[in-house]
Image (tube, rainbow, N blue to C red; front, side):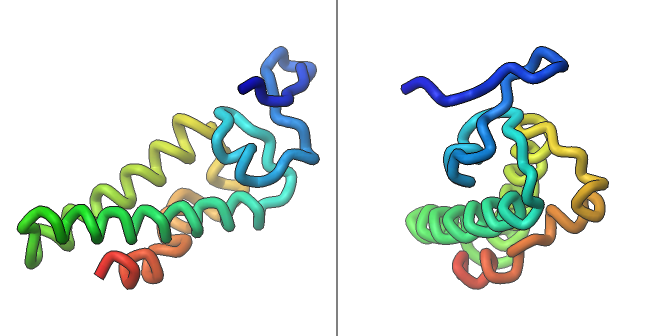
Length: 113
């Protein structure tokens, strides 16, 4: 499946602005003109990840502090690598990496439990 992209002045391919947020979420180095859309993608990605990890941890006999700690580490690591390596977002535009990392974490944790 070919994605719609355009060549910009710096030579990189950027996804067109009219594409949906979910299409841009799946394409590396997408352009995010609306900061709220990117944060919404992070939020909902975290919710899905919380439920999936909760089911997976439930199938494994993963309990107690170790299970909770592993959830926090996996959840934060996936978001960190998605933002920095896949999307190459300048985190300072969003208030720093901590703001992106904590976006939707507590509701994801509730879904995990």
